[in-house]
Every structure is written in structure tokens, then in C-alpha cells.
Image (cartoon, rainbow, N blue to C red; front, side, top):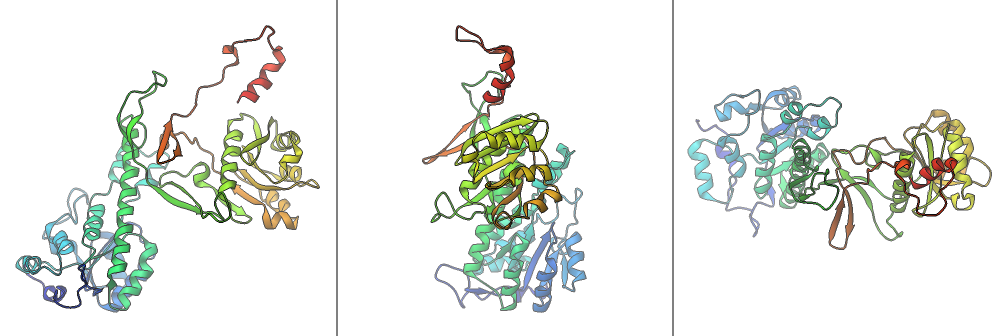
Length: 457
């Protein structure tokens, strides 16, 4: 491939402005490779590229979008000398691209290789990956759909740029565009910025691979996120536990504080998990705390076990009451009556839509709760809870989307211990009163079977 006119300008002089640990303190950006699936905020980055006169190497929809914003674009195929093939599966996987990313600007031999082959350095790589996690969570997603959304070129570009962060900056998230645009506007990226971007890039690819690994394990019939099954002492009909678990968690919710006010805390969840507390939506009230979520978890779990309309009341992780009834307000009434004193300042969860009748049940004189959780709230219920100033300012209304927390995307129940994690299969053995064994001389009356079954649940 003939050397382009910009090639000689793209090679920084390695003798100038060098850090002792390699890389220029401020790395000018002359050429960028931009390939993004999610084009959110691309206009902001494009404005900076255009103003700085940076050439963007791109392809497909990204190239068209950049051209629409007035950016000078060079098609990837003009650099590789090879068209997109296999329905776009192969676009950027080419030495002319990766040499431009991986070349070390302080190595004369690297620069000589680039010059010999007419390859320009790429000082900025902007890539976000195919949305594998969101696709596999959709109803009706097939194995073929999922496999086509396993990005190959994107992670390869990201990892190459992150490895060579001394001479290449890598952007993997639209939330980084403002920082990238600011760097472009002032003449380039600093080594500290490139190190930060590189760390975030490896976090991105690690999480991406972890989600794929969990899905692949489930697709192969293993516990999600695991590999190489080993024997287990559990039920013989259960698949064995894996020898390795791959976990990648993203921060979903910053918390007001931890177990104590002086501790910071946050809630994390796998990128492909959006049910239960991982998908909660807070409608009102102050920030949730670490202890709130512990209580909320217990309340939601108990309410979720109730087949009819059900309610659970939790305080300091201890159940104050739980009830099943024909309607949510009746269930709430019974659950709160179990221990009215402890129910003050508690966390409440129901397993049906929280309506105005349920709100009136809680708004009785002398009653207050910290958090109310439900699959959804009616507008009338929200309005009713706002009639009391103290409730409006303090009580948290939280929508918790229903879903099986032990679905294939989860697979195991995990708990941290000092320096390790414990894993077990969830207790999914159904209760069958007919199989109970009476160990006392007198059997309970028949009309006690249902209450005992509820209590045991």
C-alpha cells in the first residue's frame, strides 16, 4: 500500500518531550479510528475532531454519521486494501490497522516498519462494542442472535490500544467523549489520561467477556458463569458446581452510606441482570442505604414466595410480619398487625401493584415506614403517599421488577466470607405438606396445614 501524505506527520519525534516511563506527556492526535455501535453523543466528539482537523478512519454507519457531522473520513478498506467480508464479520482485523495502533513511538525500528509499509499511526481509538448483554435479555433471543452479537474486532482494537496506551488513547464509552473532546481541543492526551482510559478499556472488555462466558456456560448446560464442572454432594439430579466462576459487576447504585454512616457503599450487579434489586427504580425519597437494601432484599424475597397477594415487613433484617390475602391492602393490614411496634420505621414489600387502598392502609396515624417496594405503583397511590409532608420527604418508593433471581443468568447463590466466596444452589425444593412427617404423638389438625405451610415458607 502506498504511503499516504500524512504518514510522515503521524510519527511523533521520539527524541522530544518523552517521559522516563515512555510516552509523550501530551500526545498530539492526528488520526483516529472510530467504530461505534452506540452513537449516543457522537456529535460532541465529532465537533472536536472536525475543529482539530483530525482524520477519522471508519466504516459503515459510523463513517456516514461522522461525514454528516463534517468530519474528514477515510474508509477502513482504503487502508487495508480489503473490503468488508462475511457480512461485516471482518472489517478492521488487518495488520495495516493494528500496526498503526501498536507501534511504539519511541522505537525507530517500529517507525521504520510503518514507513516501509505505508502505515499511519492511530493516536486515538474510539470503539464501543456490540450490545451483547442487552440482546440476550430480550424475549425471543435465539442462540444465533446472541452469537452474531459477540464482537470480535471491537475488543481486539480496544485491547491493542489499551496495551499501547503510552502512544495511543482509547475511548470505550460515550460518557468519556467530553474528556476526549477536551483533550483534543487542548492539543492531545496526557499519559495520565491514557492510563485511565486504558484501565477503563480493560474493565470494559473483561465485563464483556464475562457476560459472554456466562451465556456460553448456560448455552452449554453448565452453571452460568462457570466452567469445568466438578462433582457435588448435592442432589444427584443437579448439574455439578463449576471449578471457576467468572464475575464482572457494574456499579448500579451509589448508596447513602454503608452499614455505618462513616462507611461508603454502592450496589453492583452483572451487566446482563435487570430483574430484582438489580433493576430497581426509585420513585421518591432520599437515597437508599446499605442496610435499606439488606432489608429490602429480605422483604422482596419473602413477598415473592407468596402465591396470592402478599406483603412482608422487615426491620433490621428480621421479619416483623408477613401475610397472604385476597388483596394487597388486606395482606398489608395483616402483616403490619403481626408486630405494630416493630413495624414502625420498617421496610415493606408487596408482590402485586401497590394501589391507593394499600397506601391508605399504611397512612394510619402513628405509622411510618422507611421503604415501600412493589412491582409497580399506581399514580393514585403515589399521590396519596405525598399527602403527608414527612412521608413525601423521607419514604422511598421503589419499583422492583419481578423475575426469578435464580434464573440462568444468575445460577448460584453467592456470599462473601473473609477472602473468599461461598456458592450454593438456591433452595428450590417445593414444599409438599403431604410429604411432611409428624414427629410428635399428636398430629396437627387438618385446618392448620395451610397456616403451617405458609409459616414454613
